[in-house]
Image 1 (cartoon, rainbow over the protein chains, first blue to last red):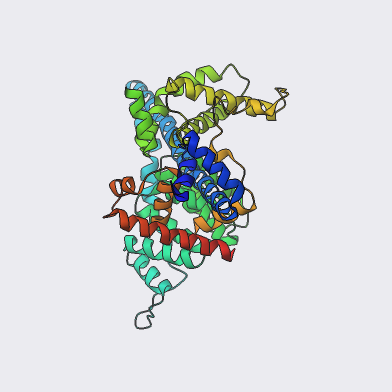
Image 2 (image 1 turned 90 degrees about the vertical axis):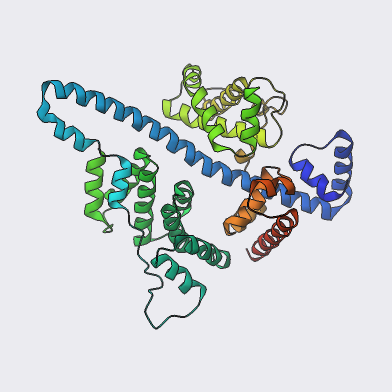
Amino acid sequence: MNTKTLITQSLNNSLSDKDKKAFDALLESDVEFAKEVTFQQSLQKVIAKEEYATLKTHLQSLENSKSTTNYKKWLVAASIVLLVGFSSLWFLNSEASVSSQELYAQNFEPYRNVIKPIVRGEMDDTLETTAFTAYETKDYDKALILFNKMLDENDSEITKFYKANVLLQLDKTEEAIVIFKQNTNLKGDWKAKNSWYLAMAYLKADDVENAKKQLEILANNQNNTFKKSTVKKLLEKLD
Amino acid sequence: MVEDNLVELIKQGNVKALEKVYVTNKDSFMFFARKYNISNDDIIDVYQDAILALRDNAIRGKIDGRGELRTYLFGIGKYMIYDILKKRKRLHLVDDNMFFDKETYSKPLFKEELNTQDKKVKKAFENLGDKCKEVLTLFYYRGFTLDEIVEHSNYNSKDVVKSQKSRCLKQLREYISKI
């Protein structure tokens, strides 16, 4: 068995006893081999953590959407009871049960391109320009590829912020949530925008609880001016 | 057996199968965990981690032939609850190794600490494009062979996957060297 296969099988815990001996012997005697093993183990660990982050978010939204569904069922039951006696209350109840998806649809628009405004006649063909042109023209599949390329060249949280906006448009809500959550080094206005879009992503995923948490962070920040009144209104609707 | 199928589907990365295990066992897990003195939110958090630990163990070939899935899930969950209680000093134990004893439940990879080198790899990995992330995830974490990757994705042949994988690995190493 070649050394590559030995390492792969050790990662999958599928080495036979005999191969395990060969593996251990190489680990002792061959520095390059040992280095490669360490690298691949490290990569495996990092990927495990990435997968964990994505799926944890997924289970959390599954959990929260389940509890909101239960809550809605109760709300419907309560409405019916109320209808019998006080038909006039019907209007209030129906307004209170606007779904988080609807609120998302009412409030979400992809954040405008402030990084590379596209001016007719002054186009260059840099990666940044083509990426943001695709973004502005709503060619989100293309925009995603180009933002990824930009991120390959330069790891910028603002680019990630736009990428996450694209992911929301492409219904890849969980991936978007992971990015917004990991964007922790943004400052000032960008930080507020990131929180707002994270709240939007949670709404889209039916995770009202976390959406509210993000909106409350925005509402409680005295210095924040971004979407201030919308945040307040939305919080009232979610309560 | 249906359960074997579920484990197999989870190994292949099927999220619906994972959700099924999650939903099916949740109520009984909540009931079982309530006897420990921790909040509902903590129990849900532990339950989610236990489900993901189950997945991690299944993917890394540490779960085959170990009897009922539910017993395994509750076993991992119980250790995680002990861990919380221990951190809160409500439970005093002499030996830390009691948790995730290798012979019974193996500690999920995502619970491992990252050392300096790992952190560099993490940063570099995050910078890769989605295609690279996917191919490396399938090969290095999910344990797919090149042939299985062809089956699972849009690649046309084993050779294409092979060269894509080495390109991505090269890019990853370049990023690491720049950090």
